[in-house]
Structure formats: structure tokens, C-alpha cells
Length: 335
Image 1 (tube, rainbow, N blue to C red):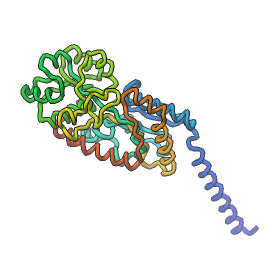
Image 2 (cartoon, rainbow, N blue to C red; image 1 turned 180 degrees about the horizontal axis):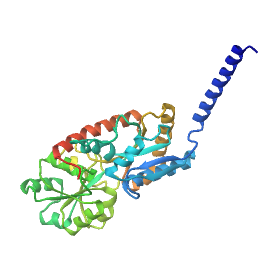
Image 3 (tube, rainbow, N blue to C red; image 1 turned 120 degrees about the vertical axis):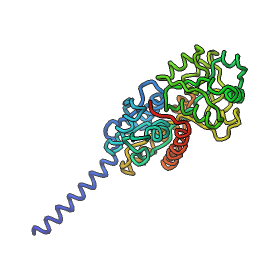
Image 4 (cartoon, rainbow, N blue to C red; image 1 turned 135 degrees about the horizontal axis):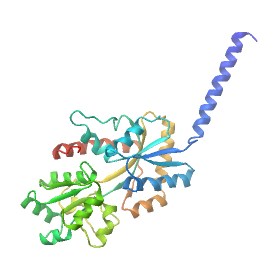
């Protein structure tokens, strides 16, 4: 065979083999375990949302999704790790209101900048779930000052500026910022007392060392049911199925537009190929909407979502805009 003809035939065969291998590789996704990075410690709200989702993906399509907790620096360590991971579909992040809402304006102050861009460095897959916070007060504080609802609290705070102590799980957390949004919209001043986590904050709240807290619903449920904490309202736009008689802050405080939910969603490195991203999106959305996952989410007070890539992307941008204003108005800084 003439050399030029041999070369053409060889290149054609090579190209065909390459295309065949590429198609085969795409069809086999995933061909190895997927790392699902949780930028918070195990047993927290983000971790508890991720595990039923991973289990459902294993049961429904046989995907081996391995939970990997990478906490630290307000969840920025885990988020940065995923942002800089290979864009091949094998590293996911459970993003949250912290990593993709509050942290961008909170950490991008002064000379400090986040090591990743929450919009440009990630491809949004779907919003998995929303979890309301709940405004709880110390029962003795409420009884002593005749605080039976949100309007009573607003009136008391306005009449006694600086005398209401507001506990949180730490500066810049969703719990803290839910309170700052409340203060901003009600034009009240309450003293913020940051703790190292919800547990010590709740302990002091029940002991009467602080007065109120905008806590994640799951960690307060048992204390509410036992009467150790008095709930006034949930911070979500809609009432929680776990406490259908408990109003939202928007309705109880006559504060239209108030909403401060903790949310969780799957994002992956921005340059992940579209076909892989679409496959991930399709299966994750199916898992979120499965009966098994819904039941587990409802049991912890979370509302499953499962929206489109575009809807989640817009949601993230809106959250950054919203919390940028709250951070600026409150003067919140990293401590």
C-alpha cells in the first residue's frame, strides 16, 4: 500500500477508535466512586441532607457516592477543594447558604478574598432542599416580658434597645444572619452573642443566659416539644409541615419579604462537560423527588426541591445579592 494511503487509513482507524473510546467512556459514567464533599463536620444539617441523597443514588442507579467531610474556615476549605478539582464529574460539593450566599460578601472584605468564585468556578446542578430556622425564646424571658408572638418581641426590642440578647452558632452563620435580617427589617437593636456551634448556644438559651435565637429547626425540635424553648415563628416563606400551626415571621411580624432559610444544593466544577453535568442533574433531581428521600427530609423539617440547573444558578445569584445587603447593613465581619 502506498504510504500516503496507509497513513490516511491508519489515521481514520485511529480517529474512529478515539471516538469509540470517548463514547464508551461517556456511556460508562460513573466508572468509579464519586466524591461528595460536605464542607461541614459529620452529623450536621448539611451532612444529614447529603446522606439520604447518596443512599438513594446507590439504590436507584447503583452510583457509588462517597461522603467526604472537609470542614473548616466557615466551609470555604471544602468549597475551594471542589472548585479546584478536575472537572470530570467525580467531585461534587453540597453547597449551602453559607458557601454560596453569605460567605461571598462576608469574606470578601478588606484585603481578604475568597480563594474561589461561587458563581464562575461552579456549575449549578440542583437545589436539593430548604430548611427553615425557627425563632425560639427562653420561656421565662417570654413570660416575664409578656412576649407571646413576634409582634410582642418587636415591640419589646424597640422599647428596650440593646436589652435583648440574641444567641447564634457563630458570626456569619445562617443563624446569625437570620437575626441580622430580622433586626434590619424591624429597625431594632439586639445584642448578638456568637457561640462556637448551636449546642452551647442552645444550652445558654435554655439556662436563661441569653434570650432568643434563630436556630436551625432540627436542633430545636425536641426542646420545643419538651417546653424548654418557646417558638414564635419559622423563618421560611411557608410554614413548616412539622409545625403547621407555627406562623412565618413574615406573617406573624407583618414583615412581607422576610425569608432566611438554610438551603443545600449540588454544584460541580464549572468546566465539567455538559453531557456529564446533564446526567448528574437528571439522576440527582430524580433522587431528590423520590419518596424515600422526601420522607427523610420531611422528618428533619426540610423541604425537598429539585429544580433545574438554570433555576438553581439564578437562585444562587439572588442569594448573594440578598446577603450582601444584610452583611453590609449589619456590619458583620469574620471573627
